[in-house]
Length: 362
Length: 258
Image (tube, rainbow over all chains, first blue to last red; front, side):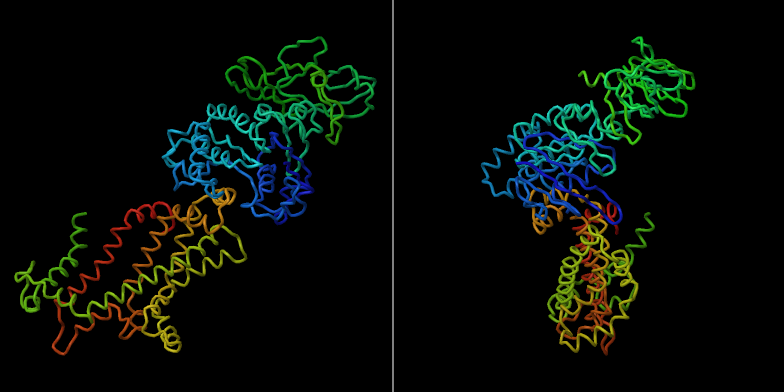
């Protein structure tokens, strides 16, 4: 039971929604599609579900070519970002509807609906209509409907995006547990890197209709293959700075430089792109070789225990995430520090040349 | 408000008043209520087949028309709301322009056409003729309601395994029930009050009530009382329909495109 996309692409009119993509999703895995809005997450899911036909390429499920198969005949379940239920039916009938269509007996349906409802904490609400429920309950109803179907492929398209923070955390913990036992292939689309890291499994990062990288979530996070992936898999996005290497030193401008240690020593001299995550910018030097950058503060955002600082560094916009509530005034000069071991080196075309030293160690 | 109601209700009251009087009283004196209360006018209508068949004929073709209009408009409106096809916007507009022409324009072609194919003086003839006006209206109304239903519901249903007809009846129709109610109401009312086409296309067997009413003109003058009673009875079905669909209509006005 695995889903294989083979050279799949989707072109609508003159717009390419999905560039030629090869992807293999194994049985019993959680696969996260991570990318910003309009990066093609939903388009890709619709191809997987069979709601859309690919312009080119084949879709294989369980060793069979299902490219032209009707969506009714595929064993898939899907949950949308909007809370989609059948408003005219009760919650019970909503959950029971896929089972009824499978032709199961009434007693069997009753048993399975109650099992799913228990799991989703919907039991007291079974006789209500979906529109009488809160958003979280509506989405749980949709999840329960996807769950009872026992589908081999479960597609979750930003299922938590429209929920409030608290419910989102609750459901985010439940979802992997719920489907772990089912042995199905799970696909979960999200815009939030944090969510991908919490869900674990595999992550495919998407950018403008292309899968830039696919692999185990932590390794995609630690060693992104290119600058685009790093940008997608970082919230706020990764900061970039052009650097040059000469005489075994990396020059970061502003008279700041770092020794090219380890594998960096073999790097050919030339211009590169340095990337570093916002949480690695610090307000104080913690190590002796930390580099100092003079920037101007444009905005601060205080989240409670952390502070986002939006910086202007010679026209480049950087974002830093620093601990604690920092009382800073916009417009002031601010020196920030960066440890060279936190720096990813990308070639000018964006491909990763050397991951940050800390990531290799982890 | 009170004044408005007064003016609105006055003609209806006067009609009721007249229908309960004798002809002599109607013509002879001015009275705000019937002095000589009689139900003779109503009895005459409800016992004379040539009278009550007028109502039955009207009801038959109105119901046939409503059913056909909805049966045709539902799939058409679904197509307009869900799919993009070449010229869909133009077609949608041109549907409506059908209603811009007065029915009189169509009376002659319909008369000629139905006479030659043998449909003249049948209920279905009138029903079909009215469809020309009612189908576009119903499509227009239903499309507005269908657009309000997210497409994801359709897709979820397909993923769950519903076939299209099953989905349409089991899931989609209940969602646009108020739209269907509103569309049916408008079809019913148009068909019920339309006089010209129904009169032109019928002679004896399918003669509508509105045409029957002209019978009261005789050599001895007008039979005022019976005419008034017939008028009252003509208002009744419309009032009944409005009473039953009033909730739908209120919802429909609020939600869809009416």
